[in-house]
Length: 331
Image (cartoon, rainbow, N blue to C red; front, side, top):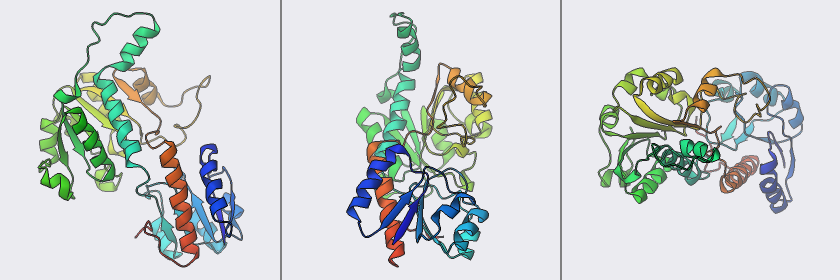
């Protein structure tokens, strides 16, 4: 049994090596290169591939694997929107993802960033760095005084709600698919418009499926309260970033925290110091006192990385053994 892993980062190697040691019957090789039509040849002679990347799994890439006799692919991440499923069906691919690796990692990050913008820590840090230790006018707001609208009540959204309730915030929620516990607590509103009208803070926890594309746009922002705070640690394509910038310019949006960006591939997880920065929109947002930008790091904890590697490698082995893992993608 042979598994080839692509895009293995240094921080993933300890977890991968632990898995290899625990499964001596499996031959595992890996590279830091991403899977594409050219690098697919590295997996020749292997039974399955294990991957994590923002590049698309295109027809060309899947064809290259198919021609090597490989039709088993396990993703170390949640998102599957970058897979050409038509080609995957044609080539009878078995695919898995890791839908629940650590909801707490993303939920915690989103609420930490929410707290930071409410307490204006970016401005305060800048003042302290200049040895300006005066309080005023950098006054913050208390979480318990906010009505926080949670959009999406899946695993991550529900953990975020628990954290928010610990702060004493009033929580309201919207989701097309109601969770029984959230329903029993009476936290759902019937429409997004209701959430927009009531929420002081809005935080997103929904997937970047076509139905949710640019759900935060000029029209939806206009329905929100003046001075709304928006947090997005979910998917970049949920937001029309031009409309968000316009909302910040007008003051309609008071504060914004973002961990994801629609055009982040090739931008995030790259060292741009001493180089020309390629994206003026992100440069503009980074420069603002009322905006926090993190480069898709909400997931990035030791626990999450361990789960992503371990669960995906377990799924690869299950596929090779002719089994269907619980995290197999149904498509």
